[in-house]
Length: 58
Length: 261
Image (cartoon, rainbow over all chains, first blue to last red; front, top):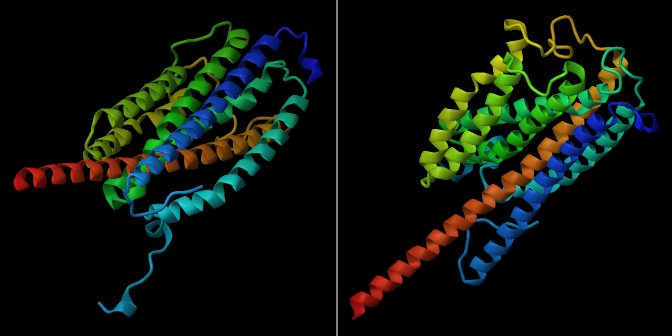
């Protein structure tokens, strides 16, 4: 790993790994935030007395 | 048919029940996440321990994330093709959910394939981009993904939207063999296949092994993300059903009040 620093391709390697890390973390954030929002919406609807055929938890 | 002859649903039929599928997600998700993290740690360690390639130098390390991104971009599309067949042939309730959930993840991996390829291409080819058959057909894959996401979002009626998307997915699938064989059918700046090819991989084992480990890590990242996205899609449908129920009961209540007056 230390051999990478100071090489002429350092910027390209870091950029490639950086963009992959950023996009995968963004995907994870997107699924988690959507899940939290959907759970909140379902809870609100159930509080309003609406029943669904199957239960969602987790 | 007597009560004794009615069989309990099994296999894919059993998973048509959202509760059963979501229970399976709860079991599989931590397992897939743990496997992905372990493989990623091993793959990164192996990838950064390899010697420099005699042609690519240190940029060979970009291959360990570029190639798995490309595999997942095409794998996600094949997941959508299975979903499309599930919608059109077997009418499995989860088929459209699986296809729809795979689209944004597939689009993200396609973008990663293009971005990392471009970052590798600048020092190795001397250019960020060329309109050769491989790069262009892969860009077309990204456009297909975005088009399918737009199609799903533009049709309100669920059955119609899933059928239309399934047909569009199958038409778009023609691009997958074009991507795969473009480097053999046309003269391209992009190199030919070096892993999945007749006669076995042409890559040296010291580069092949970290690449395969990273490929498996990306596969489990995709599987974990796909399960989570499928869970979200099922919940979206449950919310829509409840909202419709609420709207319907509001309408019924209003018309009863009008009749009473």
